[in-house]
Image 1 (cartoon, one colour):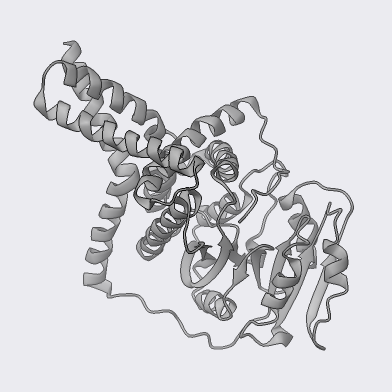
Image 2: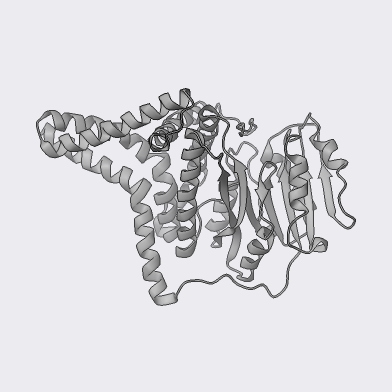
Length: 397
């Protein structure tokens, strides 16, 4: 009886982990192929006219990056008379506001600086400035990212479809030539995430956007509680709840350097995990697949399982595998050997990271373990209520 229960728990845990990290992607691929048989491969629309757009950049103590960001904004292939650049620097106590104010922008550039000495968090700063946005589309971008020149055009063309409520750009990690565990793991993770988002968008809608680069229809913006931890995710999913699609545009991308260390990447992952649990509570109606249909299916498969059941299933998978292998079953012994090898590679990745040695094969298991361990820590922060929406950005290399 005990062996039967252990076997059931093992196979259920294995299915959850496999589906959350690989199975959903495989299923998405086949669903997309079926959809293309009937509708063909979608083509990006061509806008009849180019609308006015506001690019809103919230920058807190970004003196290191801000001049590069302004220079980047001046290189967009978009009519400058239709592009409004808003920089909001609330709470910054370094040179960020002065650097923006004194930057020699070309004549005709529509750049505005908004500054308040009080720091209330990113979403509070954004909400303070949103009443000043008069354009039909607003694009959000982080100050420490480099956005490609055609990004704005590639984003706004999707708004030809009235069902499009938002457009998510792609996040890219600019790795060093010899990437460490942070760069290798983070880079591969985001490449895989980008592929899933591309397929999510083609099937129906992206489930959440990365704050590095995304846009919405300005009239769809609504109040987000100031204690919201991952405001970009919540903002875009609320729009999707209203029946609009969030489109993924890989040809609009924001590049940033890798996290400075695995400790800095963990800080970021823990915050996202805490925010994920908070978002699941606030967006719990999205779990109703009878009401939201395919959006709920995508949300649960792509996000909820990774933040809840998959990390919880990992220790169950190992313990039940160990119990069954000790009973002498050769199948479970082989599977246990595979798990032990995976975690041994992760441990080697950790040790090599400490010695600054570069063997990428060990870094991926290590990053996977760090990512899931961060979920446990993020859940604990969420339970304690100790994760503030006002946070210090993870240091980048």
